Image (cartoon, rainbow, N blue to C red):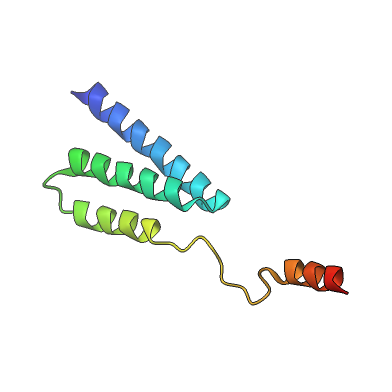
Length: 87
């Protein structure tokens, strides 16, 4: 059973890396998928553990990170190009 647990922890580390990469790429769908797999893995590994709720809460917080920054300048270059084209 120990090799299975070690493999499960290794899989969680891979999923954490995938979640980190999704955040860096601003890929919301990949982040949601990775955190869902993390939550499932945590449930299997830590069922009945007092730390499970905290770790699942952290995974849920990760899943809800907004990856698209609202910037007042977003799209301004496109607007400027359109304005130039219209002149």
